[in-house]
Amino acid sequence: MKTARRGATGSARRAPAAKARGGIGHNAAALSDADRLGLFKSMARIREFEDQVHRSYLEGLVHGTTHLCQGQEAVSVGAAKPLREDDFVSYTYRGHGHCLARGMEMENAFAELFGRSTGVCQGLGGSMHLQDIERGLIGSFGIVGAGMPVAVGAGLTAQLNGRGQVSMSFFGDGACNIGAFHESLNIAQVWKLPVLFVCENNLYGEFTRINHTTPFEDLVQRAAGYAMNAVAVDGNDVEAVYAAVEPAVARAREGGGPTFIECKTYRHRGHSRTDPAKYRPQEELDAWLKRDPLILYRARLKELKLLTDREADQISADARAAAQAAAQRAAAAPWPDKDQDFMAKVYV
Image (cartoon, rainbow, N blue to C red; front, side, top):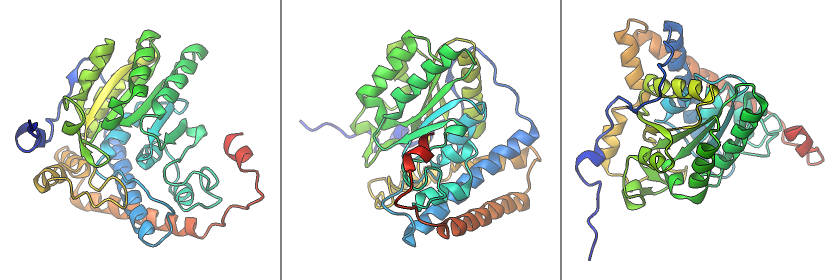
């Protein structure tokens, strides 16, 4: 008997409503006008960086493949906002946005993608393995879900040192079906670790839609099996993401334990640069493109009289120019010295 395919019509194709489900037990700290403009600028910076990565890839500057996050900027920016400089963050191979949201310099990020000695890992990591310990960026991982146990370990460190730090782990919907996911949520809840599990549910695990791999599309349900505090949120609304994450971070700092946060979002491009993403229905793609997080937030800031179209265009233009200049400087940087003590430079 053939199983009917879900996702062809109906709610599976609709973008989520812009509100969270679940409860955190705290109210999010209010955002100032300056905060809101900063969120928009950070998302524009990530978007222009990724667009430049695509151009640089076509120019042959990026070796191997690369995984871009256009469309998912609101998650990394909104979730990073409540974090302190000494908090820990793990993320995936689609992690450029998370790094930039934490303050990584464009030039050093490009240099790493280009394999140059001025990269954040001295050119050793490439596109899939950016890290910067000084910014709490403890690693991106090429293996699906591999950052989650690492984030749990960082959470244990935070709990033991008593400094009020938290650990945040970003992962995709595909990671919710692997063993490391369940093991990580289980031990974090049992030990009440200060860990924020942020699921970027973009509906596709590589080339496969979620309805072909998972019995439901609301992954917040996974947390129920561990009696874990959980919330689902529109991942294309940067303020909604912030409103969900900020109270969860505060709760974790107070010893309240972990939270699972599902952010419904969508990547604009294929899984990697070799993927044209023809498997996605056009009407689904069109619906999500209309909910581009930058378009949504730009409209919101205009409504609040905080931003004009001209000012928004200038912010994007400035970010584009900055990305282009950073890429040019990075491409001119020297290649790593084959006799260099790489490991000492990266990890010491």
